Length: 354
Image (tube, rainbow, N blue to C red; front, side):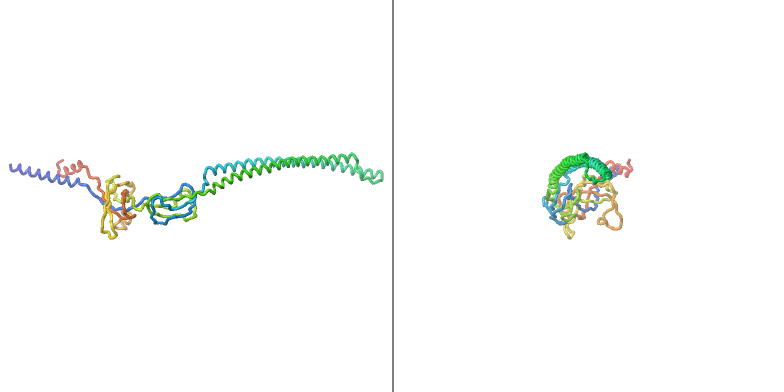
């Protein structure tokens, strides 16, 4: 009877010890790690080339969404209209050059034929003149008289040849004048057509579009990378902006416990609320991303500056807040607890009942 009570008492004692052990071991573990508040940077750029006309802000200046922060000049030099006009200019120049070359070739042909025909006639005239000189010289020696007159037949032939030369020159001149007139008309038409197209092109090129650049978010101006009157290429960064208050925290957690965190897990952010570091504030936040690459902790977050400390980056999305950018915060995360079966198995092994 007495031994039965002792066994019952020991059983109850073991049950209480077991319940206490299970309660303690199944409690949520809480780990703390450090982080720095940060903000997403907004880049101000353009998909087309612009010229910076005016900057309305300074680095570090606070602006509201919709405030005009700069003015840029957009020139429509890459529009389809300009490309079309350039094509038309090339086409007109090509056709004009081809037509001018053709007319110039015809002109050269007429001049060559004219010179050839005139040369033939000049040769005939020279032969007649030589024969007449020989005839006159012969008559003078036989008749012992001076004879300088050209025969009627030769004179008629010479007159006919001179008339033929005039006709050839007149005909060639008429043809050449006609071709020169066509050349002038071609050049004039080409010049007129090109002038109209170039006027259209210059109008487009000189069409200045002033764009008022507005702040896309409430925040502060970061860096300004160009001066007024400078030109920016497509997608070159004019300036950067960031939100007035941090939008997330980058935490650094030791690699041994990082795998116990989950995306979407709730955490607490503890931060100093005054410059004397006497007040502590707390806000709830959620884990947004967990990096898969081990990095070295920032020096600011190390207790011993020269000792390497490795772990993973944890990005935690912040609710609306008034923290400062780059502020050091403490992150408290509730890590995954071990399963009840696993803990029970450990207990049974501990009690050597399994």
